Structures are given as structure tokens and as C-alpha cells.
Length: 437
Image (tube, rainbow, N blue to C red):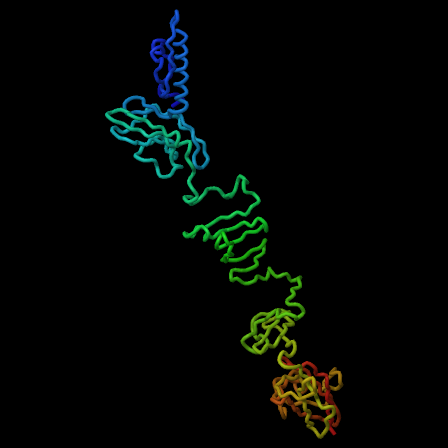
């Protein structure tokens, strides 16, 4: 239906205009008394009333009648333009005749936005974005008895509240889009069903340029955060197990703990469940390992399990190995090694020692006419490095290792000792000279 009224305003006759003096117009107001005299018809008063009536009927149509009775139970609807919930502008072209139900009060006439067609019901639809309200209509005895336009409802309709919002089609939501509160703290709150003060919230802290999670938005009590991982920039800082990711550690940075030992702060390595260096698994150079006794080991070469060396003693003191300065006798000649502390006192403790017989004091060459055996007088043989020339031994519980040095011809040799793997000995520089008399 075009943008016209269900009826056509026309110029009334002079007789009708004269009879309306002091009467009411379609809008409900009264005309001024236009009874004037004149020699010709229409008089000036009648002409003025004619034009006023025409203007008022046109204004009445513009201001009010989306809906008018067009005879019987039928109503006509003028052209209507409206905007749908998704922002689309729609034109309803109007209807010359739409039938209402007879003998019914409070019939609701509206446009269904989904189909852009007229509909009627005993109530407005539940969701306001689904319809455009037009009028409430009463009928009786085959005629429309009253039309109550819903123009005011249409003009004053509000969008759904945030409580009914379950989803949006847009890809973002902006809080304070008009910038009325720009430069201040802003919150998204979550109702806990108690008091407003108990609501949890995501807070934008304007002063510090950061987001804060809070369990109570009024007291800004910090809230915990549970996530699958933590990524800062493009780097995963905490992985899905909650552990510090390797990529988050700056290998070129110096990490300082404590203040030169003045405070009880430092780096701690968790002790293993067994003693000694790792015996399985792949390891790389530079790894540190603490065994069950608190002893520190350093990996010096990659491998499975890699090459490990004990860093030093981590128990009571640093030990040395002492060998008699000159031992002589008939072959075989006993040579005794003793573990001592730095004060020179004997240490009653089992230690691992690597012993060799050499031609010179530098240990550059094995002895040519002397050998050591694998059945020490005190202590225990572990394994050969070079059969008869270099072997690994354990001292006895008193820290003593006594070996037999056998000679093929009379002469002297040098007995050198050094700490073996798992040993706490640090200094093995004392070289013993053994001579067959």
C-alpha cells in the first residue's frame, strides 16, 4: 500500500464548513466559531474553515493513523519503515484491507519482522525484536469499534536488556563505545546471586594499564586464574603441566639469588632417590645432578647416560690420598695408600682410587718391570683400566688400600693415585716410590 491514508482527505463543502463552526475536528479539537456574513458564497469564514479542516485531517494522518478502519471488520495499514535487530532497514508497503476477528477486544496487530507481513494475536510476541507493534483493536457485531494505535510503543521501545543477551553475531563487543567514561577503570561483572559487592569481575586498571581478575569487585580482592597454558607475547611461559617452559628462560641472562649469601635465598636442586651419578637416560653436557646424599655431579659430555664427574665433596671435608714416600723390600713390595683430611689426619671412610705403576714421576709411561695385582692386601679391586698397570680400587672402611707391587728385576717404579668416579678425594698429588731391594 502506498504512503496514503486508507481514505482521501477532501475539501469539504461551504455548507459543511459553515455547519462546523464551533464543532470538533478529527483530532478531537474544536473549531473557532466561523459564522460570518458575506455577500458571496463561500464566505471568508467558510473558506478559512475549509482549509483548516483539510490541513488538520492531513496532519492527523501523518501524526497518528498507521491503522484505520476501512469498513466492516477490516483495517487498512499505511506504509511503515523500520529497522530490524540486525540493523537492516525494511519497508512494509502497507495493506489496503486486513480482517480482524469479530466480537473480540484487545486484538494486537503487528508486523512480523521475520516475514515482513501483518499478523494478529491476543498478545504481543514475547521477543520485542520479532515484531513492530501497530495497534490494539476491538471489534463487535461485524465492525471495528475502537483502534488504539501503538505508535507510542513503537517510538519508545528499548532493546533487550543485557540479562537476555545469549549471543551476538558481531566479532567484538566494545564497552563505553561512546567514550563517555574513557580514561577510567572499567569492569565486566558476574552476578553471584548475593549482593552487588560480592560480584566477581574482570577489571581494566586504567592507572596501571593492566587487567585484574577479582573475586569481589568492590574490594578488588584478587582471584585465581586457571588456564591450559600461559603465553606472553609469542612465547609459552608455562606449559599445560604448569611447568616453566624452557623457551621462557633467557640463556644469556644472569640470574642472581640472594645477596652474596647474606640472606637465606638460593637455587635448590632436588636430590635424587639414589646415590651416585645418573646411570640411565639421555643427558647433555652442563647438566647438574644431586644424588640422595647431597653430592653434586656435573655432566661433561652428551650421552646415555652421559659422562659424569663428581664436582667435589659435599659432606664433611675434602680428602686427599697419601702414599708412602719410599717403600722398599723384596718382590712383591707392599705399597699403602691412606685417605686423609686436609689437616693430615686419617679418614676412616671407603673411597674409590685409581692406582697406576709408572716409569717416571709424570706418569708418562707405564713401568717396564713392575706390575700391581688385583688382590690387594686391604681394600677391594674394582676393575682394570690397563691390566697389571692401572686399576680402580676401593679402600677399606679405615680408608686404607694396600697393594702388592711385583718386580721382574731389582729397581724402582712410581706409584701414582688419583680420585676415581664416585670418590670424594680432591688432591692425589703425593707420589710414592716403590723399590725392589
